Length: 186
Image 1: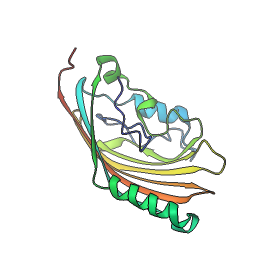
Image 2: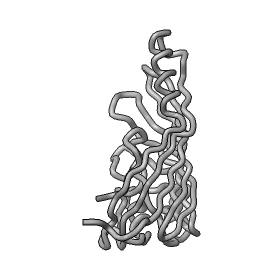
Image 3: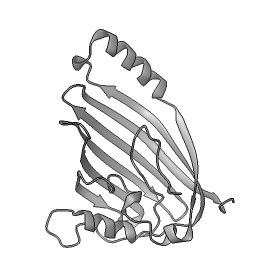
């Protein structure tokens, strides 16, 4: 199984662990290709085993000018319930996945409609700035990831601004942390 954040965020994340050098733009052309992101991701080595992943929604804001009064009240109630909630998942990371995790561990890597402004996993830190198109016309998401990692844990802050013509913009901030808790069971 692969480690992923909660479906609310729809962002595959990672348990990061190794140094790579200077970011994904290896050819220095000022553009970060999907191939460069995959190569940066494949340079990471994890510790195989069972991982516990926690995601906490810290803040959610939305553009109220695009919503009717009824929708505004309903959305506000949903937002209040989300903030402060922590979702915990456990996943087994195999030896094969630990040695070569691949780009699908990283935000947007599986999405053909993403572009990378910044993607750097060097020096025990992650610093990424990604924009992805949504499934509906006019939808897009701007994602920023910042954090630190070791071979057995990571702590990361995520900020995502999702926009659509119909709903306006919603900004979500979350904290994501994970740690290796032992050997895989079963």
